[in-house]
Image 1: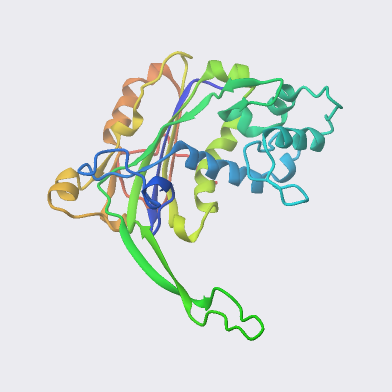
Image 2 (image 1 turned 180 degrees about the vertical axis):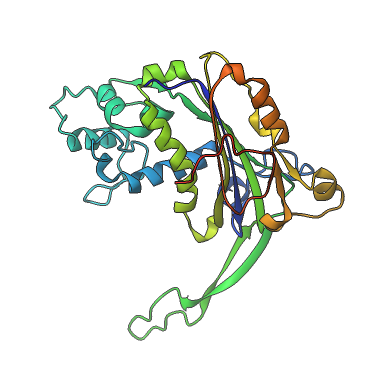
Length: 318
């Protein structure tokens, strides 16, 4: 079944970490708004990495039909060298038995056997070159409230070097420093372009895997510096008209308490118990546009508090 034009809204929280750091700012949180605004952001690249890493582990060796290999990934050869675009494509072609000496149609191979190429598109800079705009495009994820990152430091007990011969190694541990965010809630918009999906061969099965990967990939890809992440809300709206969408779904959801508390009073939320997601405006728009909507689904984490009746649209978690 073909993919419909659609929109995605994904809201997640993070505790004690920064999921997407800014290398140009001492690996602090990314801030694309003015400092006085207070919000921090996550790039779409970070979100896509969560999706890709989940699919790599969930669909080992491309899945049962070898359709879901991941093209954009960190992979090394037997000599420990990092593979580039050409070598990654050749690795997939070889894995599915479609490697031909100098004649492999990489565009066809990748569209048939690579989930992220069908979903996110590709820039293939190895001759013969080609590029394809992906049907799924994510925007930046911005925090729904002002966030103060904290500069922290600590020590590692283990010495960094061994003793060699008569020379003494370092006897003290090393000092580490890092920025961290105590708590933040992020909202990320996304679109699915039905026309682009026809060119990339994205299927409804790909779409369902994407939605699952957004949710479970957030829980799956954990590291100390990235913090404890939790998916809270996922909204997927499909439209009957391939050229229509509501747009800016993230602006139709707000936090309670509102800006007066978080900004003017100088307070910051510190846990899910401090906030409520107000879906009233979003649900109102969805009801008003029912004649243009083919399907609306909402996934909600049990620990998230909301305002608005979603039982009509709520789907079971994976």
